[in-house]
Amino acid sequence: MADRPMPKFGNVLDPDLAWVAKTREPALEPDLPIVDPHHHLWDRPNNRYLLPDLLADCNEGHNVVGTVFVECGAMFRKDGPDHLKPVGEVEFVNGTAAMSASGQYGKTKACDGIVGHAELRIGAKVRETLEAQMQVAGRRFSGIRFSTCWDADTRVRRARTDPAERLMYDKTWREGFAQLGKLGLTYDCWMYHPQIREMADLASAFPDTVMVLDHVGGPLGFGPYEDHKATFASWKAGMAELAKRPNVNIKLGGLGMPLGLYEFFKQTAPPSSETLAKAYRPWVETCIELFGAERCMFESNFPVDKITSGFGVLWNAFKRLAVGASATEKTALFSGTASRVYRLS
Image (cartoon, rainbow, N blue to C red):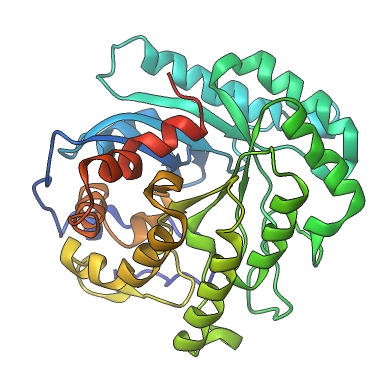
């Protein structure tokens, strides 16, 4: 691991599989049903994560009964109108889901829910994209993610969508956003913690649209956010405001990314589940306290978070974090909330 380049803050780095394999653990509560509501699939130069790779992770001892794919710019159409190119990603993932649904690959219903991408900045015209994705994937198509990650400090990596500052207030963008609720689709948001109040305003403006905030709201810990205590206080205040919007749900995960809070990827071996649980506890417990278990769901964010730990170790950490939860709360956190939000079979 020491001989390979370290990830820059906010950038995705393909995992070192030999390093990840150094820490393995038997699964805790191996019969507990899990729906992983956030993973990706892609085929990039020297970085492939497709169905066999996903299933290899899901088969590390935990009872993963289903998953939700979240857009990552994979397999966009090469030709045709720009606004319809993201339909290619949904076509690709729906084919993967059909393979999994055959039963030939085991019990996990991979990609039982699909979160695609659509260009909301074209306004109401985006409905054509959404309807095409619905036609391609049918029930599996749950909604879209449009990442709005932006910060004034240029050291903070902006989203692949190249968003403008305060994009979620833009009139035309909101005209596009309005199509989601009209079609009964969900919205996943990936942004950084200073933007949380922007999502709160959006949720108030569209109270009938089911929304999901990814990765506990993207707390940053580098550049202008090196004071981690100040980051946590600012993040918590924003999350408390966001929690007042009942249409917003939270994904508990994504803290293994290189965002400046934790740098386990620099160690000679991956952390144990106990170490991860201790590190993630303040963020996870605060979310559950504010939103309730019925609006929270654990996520793997694989393969992105694989730079920090293996799949089995990560879910052990989540189970350690939920040790005091009731049976009803535990069901919500590990499968129920995801199944409800994404309307899984």
